[in-house]
Amino acid sequence: MNKLALIVVFFVGGLLVYVAGDFPDWGDPTSPASTHVGRYYLENSIRDTHVPNVVTSVLADYRGFDTMFETGVVFIAGIAVLALLRRTVVQRREEGELASHHLEAPQSGVVVRTASRIMIPFMQLYALYVIGHGHHSPGGGFQGGVILGASLILHALAYDLRATNKLFSEKRVLVLGAVGVMLYSGIGLFCMLLGGNFLDFSVLHAVLPATDEVMARSHGMLGVEIGVGLTVMAIMYSLYLDLASHGHLDEGL
Amino acid sequence: MIWQIDSILLVLVVVTAIVALNLRDLMGAAILFGAYSFLMCLLWTVMGAVDVAFTEATVGAGISTILFIATIIHTKGESRQ
Amino acid sequence: MDLLLPKFNYILYVVLMMTGLWGMIAKPNLIKKIIGMAIFQTSLILFFISTSVKRGATIPILEHHSEPESHAHVVSVGDQLGDAVHSVATVAQHAVDPAHYMNPLPHVLMLTAIVVGVGTLGVALALAQLVYKQYGTLEEEDIISQIEADASQEDES
Image (cartoon, rainbow over all chains, first blue to last red; front, side):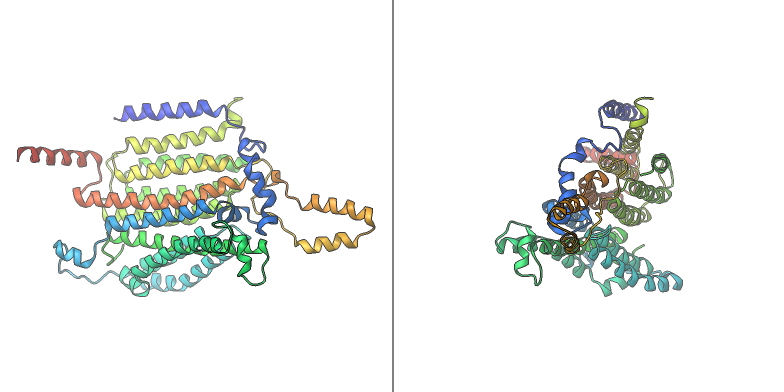
């Protein structure tokens, strides 16, 4: 088994090293990847959308379809984990799993709890900044959403899952995840209602006050990023909930 | 882009990957995987892909490591090889 | 040596990918297999990101100046001939030279790939937890021998 694995691995690796001779030199500015559509995005991002961070403008505007379905994939992954692991109290009682040993959940120390209670609002504020300022600096819906999810996970780590569930129930989290996907595709549909193409944000200037077509694209991107952020936050937290408690949502780690 | 830093980080990334795969203690492997993700994040910063590095710092070094630890705590923490 | 210097990075990416593949095939523990999968995935992402690198370029966040100011500057500067010359100069100044910025396209594609990657990682770990619940172990050989024992028991009965 091990020998066979090594043969396969070295065969694939040797093939790739052999092919690497045909690649353009590392860091070559005239390589084929850098000369076609990437050029267009760099030259026209400011003129088309007023967004200096080209990654954001390509992510949310030029290639909005891609990002929309990636958000859908993240949501589906969350649903899949839920379907695999989640066991409600009723189900567990029927399967005879729910023993009567209702132990007091081990709480972490007072230092950890206090420190995390102080840190969490700042983390969430920073996450909102990352989402909102993604047009001008690194960041955007994906990163901000993950930081928001991490702040919820920190709360669940410092207390336990029951305490976090009281603040922010599983149902509400999943609804938020669905709302994120709906927000993204809803903005796309709204563009169609206004007479443009799906996800063509430039027609939004008819409804947004004090914007021209270029700024409308920038604002449309912000709306889309908020949708992405909501979905990613909800799914990251939901993944942790199910994996940490084996789908029971009681104690956590 | 500074190629010296790039090369050093690349070698470190490869070493961390190999060690993470060969560690018997699964918890240690998960922590090393977090270190691997963080080194990868540094590598991408050096390459100028700041958005990707940001994503990897939050997702790879943050969430993935927590998910691994969550699974390992609920299972046996030792690997035979 | 001719091949090695410009392609050094590519060769290390291939080594990383081989590490991940080896982990996925040869390691008997399911968690190790999942770690191998993640390493494989990041090595591919690393390769894609490296296609965006341009020597002497900076991060793909453009320098931007407010447009109206520059126009006012051009108009206020001089006669018609000078005006034309200056507007050409301004356009040249404000047009973005793509050679100065990294290619943003691979960044976008890989950014979403990383986030989707954590989704697949979550599903893989959930499956591993279910396997552990069913068989009480994460070692491949033990799981296979238990499956075989179950199958032979069914044959007898």
